[in-house]
Every structure is written in structure tokens, then in C-alpha cells.
Length: 390
Picture 1 (cartoon, rainbow, N blue to C red):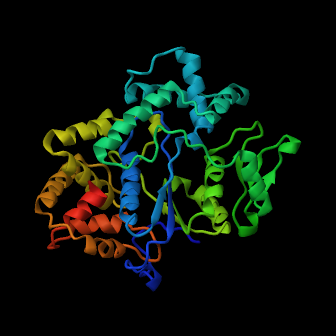
Picture 2: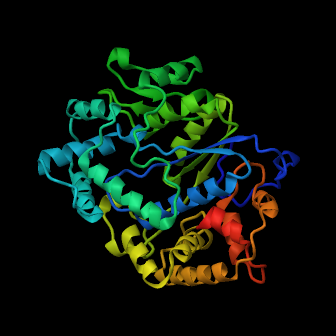
Picture 3: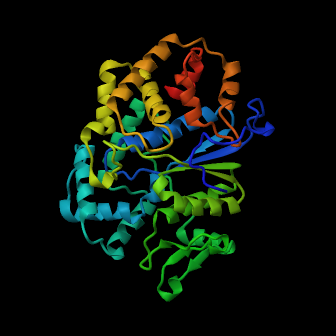
């Protein structure tokens, strides 16, 4: 399957995607997770809001599972290394009252270190993760994020829950070997590679020679055992990770489901796209944006306005820098849409949502949300707003 750089450029829906068809298809939404080590940035908010609207809009039309497990991705060096760094440099710090910015500052310092801890220093952390343990700093971050989720009206897929993947690494490699997709050099002291060279794709190391898995290895542990239970898997991710997600798509497709890749672009700040590992302006973080928005608008207007801006205005790409003035305009527009909302029409809702699908089962968040901003359009029905946007 080819990459889909834009979710709005697809052919019309075939007959089997009729909105009136029985709600029998099974869809798995699997967005990339955000490492719990820093504040939520506009780029993070965009991905979260995009996935939330897709999940809520597709539910009336299909059986949808939203899989978002921090447990699965804690074993990466990015997370375990940060925890080891905190314990090594901060000792028995009480993180219960620290802010996201304070913990994020430690993360920036960790990423600036020239050397990484050896694997044997991280192994006790990995063993603890498998038993459900989370470092107090990340537990604090996840607790704060849960509050932001409530403020934004986001479905919580289990931020603070222990949700282990269905396979161990060795079990995932066994499945990959059965499909001729694994080059395991561990018996010779080497790494493990995902091998899709027969499909014209490059070798990709997924476990280092000293046993450290990367994000792709963790995703395989989680998604391989789930793949057979779904008709369609939707992968939402950062465009910079497109090569890895092409590989992941190929693996999952071999296990039966249709796989859709949806890159969701980051949000530049003043024309620059910066990783959260370098820190950022606290005024652009989720807590500050929510505080400012709630100062002048009610909760429903904030939830709808955030979705109008981060989905419809910014779109799937990453060309437009964050603009507080446009966000404020969207909050005002949301207030007016809510005030003018037409009476609920449950019989019409499924058909309206189904009109924003094409050759896929999921509802396209960009097309659906953009439709609310069209000129001279009828006022949206209240059930559309309450079921999907607020």
C-alpha cells in the first residue's frame, strides 16, 4: 500500500462503505504515543485531537478500538534512559508537586548528555515496567495530562493504566520469522533486524546488540497479536517516522487487515519545527493554552474551538505556524456554532458521518471538521457537536 500524505485526496467511497450498512466492521486506531517526560506541545495536541475526532466520529459506523498504551513503549531507551538519568542525578526527589515544565527541563538535560547509559543499567527498569511500574516523574506527568484530557474533552484510552503488549519480544520475533521478516543475529552477539528486503524495503535494526528495543520493536509487540482481530488498522504518526511506518504497514498487512497510514504534521512555532527534547515556550503548552481559552469561553466552546483550529485550520500538513490569534477566532466561531446548533437528528447523524469516508471505514477528521467552517452552510445538528466535538 502506498503512503497517504493527505487524508483528503482519496477516491469516492465504494458501495460497501454505505453509511446505512450494518455496523460490523472492526477498526483499530493506533496513534503514536507521546513520551511522558515533558509538557504537551501544539504538535502533540494536534495529534491527540485528530485521533479523538476520528475515534468518536467512526464509532456510530463501526466497532472501534482506540489502542494507546504507554506501558508498551516504556521499554525504549528514550524512556528508560530518562528514568535512569533522574535517579542518578536527582536521587529520591519527590515529583508529586512538580510541574510539567520542571520535569521537562530534566528531560532536556538528559537528551543533551553526550553518552547514554549502558544496557545493564536500564535492565532493572525494564523488568519493573513489565510488572506495571512507572517512574514517579512519568506518573506525575500522566496525572497532569489526564487533567488536560478532561479539559479538552478527549477520550482517555488508559493514560494511567497498565496495558502490556500481547507478545514478548521473542514471541514477536517468532511470528516475524514465520513470515520471513526477521534477521536475528543475537546467537552471534549481533542485533535484530526487521527484514523486508524482499519487498524492496531496507533492513531496519529494531533491537541493538546489547538488547535494547526501539519504538518499532515495541509497536510490533503490541500490534502483531491484535492484527487478526480487525478489518482495518489506522496508524497515525509523525511524518518523520514514515520509513518505519511503511515497514509496520507491510508487516501488519501480511497478517490480514487493511492498513491505513496517516501522517499528521507537526505544528511549527514561529516558522520552526522543534522537537520537545529541546524544550519550548511554556506559553504554547497545553496547560497555558487551556487556561487562556477558559478565561473567555465556556468548556464546550473550548473543546470545539480547539478542534476547529488544530484540525481544520492547521490541516494534515505542517506548513502553518501556530497562531494564537487564529485559535482565538476559532474559539469565538465555536461559541457561535454552539449557540446556533440545530435540533438533534439521530436518524441523520450516521449518514452525515458516513459522507466523510472514501475507500476506508474510518471517518476523516479533516473533512468532517472543515465542513463546520464552510460558508453559508446550515447550522450543524447539536448531536454532531456533542457526540464528536465537545
